[in-house]
Length: 350
Image (cartoon, rainbow, N blue to C red; front, side, top):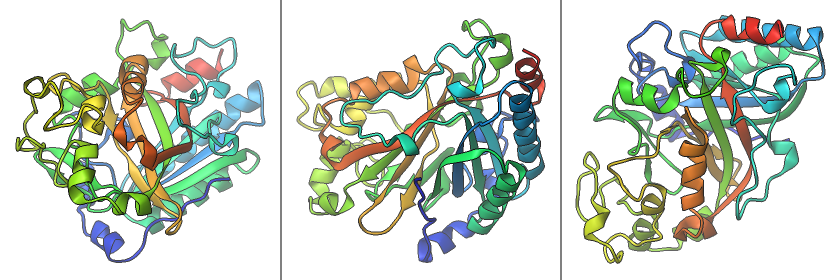
């Protein structure tokens, strides 16, 4: 079982000072904003729990309803929480989201089966580590007979809002979040499944969620000069582009075809070779810390189309300069149902 601990110390204290009200501001302007996209920035602490469902038939339907009720009870105030479905949560009689499957092992991955996949995901975020921990423990009491497959805690150091974007600092000391959309319409456009996409009707309004538990070689990274780190990343630590363009503007890589300023194998250049058409996904990642020998990123992203979002980016990242500093050890593909209980009625009546 994968267990990581929430970071403590001055950084965590600083997070507690971030206004939960500001972070939880309505991202789409509507009362039914789903919890996973609520707020310009996600709440600064998280705990993610993946379960294997032991029940089948009516018993499984009852488990899903119990989990839904538990999340509905905890969501709000200091907590934003949601459920996500793995492929094993859906019976063969149910019309499934067309991209939902087990996460494949990409080049360089060393996936631990005990820390990957799962039938049901419970993702809890909160304004404090204590609130998150209490909510997660309450959920475990609600689902006592289901097998906990893996569990991970995380935090977002320097969690803040700048220029309409939710930003934080990753374990490599760089700012995360500059590639995210800064408007409600863009967030919805990238993350929410719409009618006409070929998805089952019950899934319209939901999102595909990708989780990647990525161990980072921070000691190895810290031996490099700042200049080398920035060339590997493709940005300055503060988010400014290497050609001097402010982080709030889009770089133009076409003026640097040979990579003299921004190397062709830099992370941001591989991920989004044309910054004017950014990847259609919304990133909301967290750091984890199990001590000096095991630190990393809980990469989390949401999209309406898994192939056009995460998988397209992952294919482009093959051979990037940053690869030697990263090792993905777990995570999975999941589907976050739309707000409300209609999806649950559709699945449990099938």
